[in-house]
Image (tube, rainbow, N blue to C red; front, side):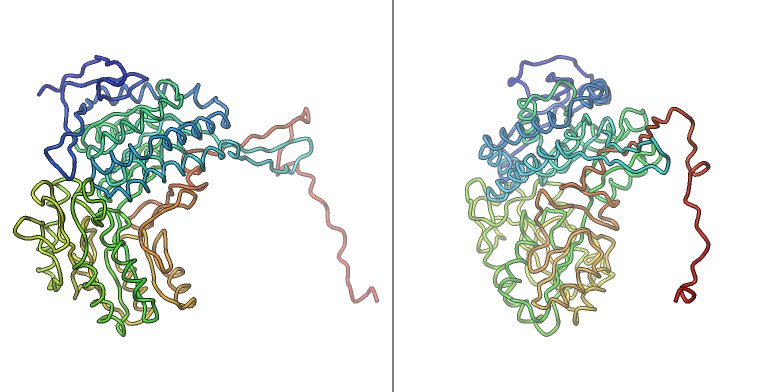
Length: 531
């Protein structure tokens, strides 16, 4: 197919296209979004953005920035509230679209749409709280003030496993603080992104404030958007995805003196100590490992089990694994997880079976792809309609093994034996990632030792490694991110810059430090001579 761009514009609601400067823009080259649970079902056909179209979207955002940034913040907040109302109205339809397109269970899909709604509710009121400060000056008749200013054009690239919640974490605060946006959503969930963007337009966003370009990553729309930093068209880059791609984005941003938001991978530890409530720990471990089929950056990668309870936990855990319900979440809402989001995720996951054998780990449960001839007892539906993976459990996994160290984006978990809290912390920290973590224990001393010693951006005590709330900071350390955070008031810091203003009303030149009238000390007082 030709890559020649077209400026053809379609009437709203008739063509699924890029959203650039308030218009639906098509391309001659297209790609299909298919139902992850039924690969014969085409959800939508979307245009593949050309470099020229990505550049046009950035230029539209740059043109829209002056007016949008001057819109009073409380008014921007009210618009964010309108987006939240639209999401509430369409919650069920959006949730079913998420389930259809990327394979998340309906319960999880509803939760992810609710996360976007919660984000809108939170940031609506923040439009009235973009506080600066007044600072006392050391000179008379002078005031010092600070203001938050928007950065400019924000480029956003998001992943397909949370196609509405995670984009909302970036888009909503970026809009609230007065920035304009070019968003390249995941090619695995473009229909959800298109619906979300149209609802934001409905709320009243002016043309050019939010621009959406569709396409692949490498050698396509995603890479073109990264290149726009070198063209001076981007002032901020926000990315959710792999650590490898995040490092590249960080390099390009660095040479352009841009501070990117990088939310990257994880190999998250879940620790279960000898005094833990095993029933609670097993349930938390099951969802941490297998929720969304393990396709979360916060999914548990290694379960570190205290030696005295290792065998008891292993027995209960495997019993639950064998009873898991897996299948098409569109037809079977009771399943714990559905298919892989796409074929490449499945093929990448399948490689880890070879890693485990080469490392000398022991496979306790799992047979790779679920097929008609190889399916767990709890599988429901047609295994040939999509890419489903067996829930996979390994033991005999140790630090240094590839199986222990690398993120495995799928329904796989390692059982690792440790001896006490100190060993658990050392072992948990023996990876290059530091996103999420969890510990199950009834000891406050051990829980506090863990939260103080773990190298992670987030920690749960007696809960899962997964999950987030709209008013809490989300992000990691080490290979999981660059110290930036999503959600809550903390994210505002990464979509604004501080502006310091020195307002001198004295009518004359005053030189701080050089002419400051410091109080002269008097002769020292000898206390012993006073009495």
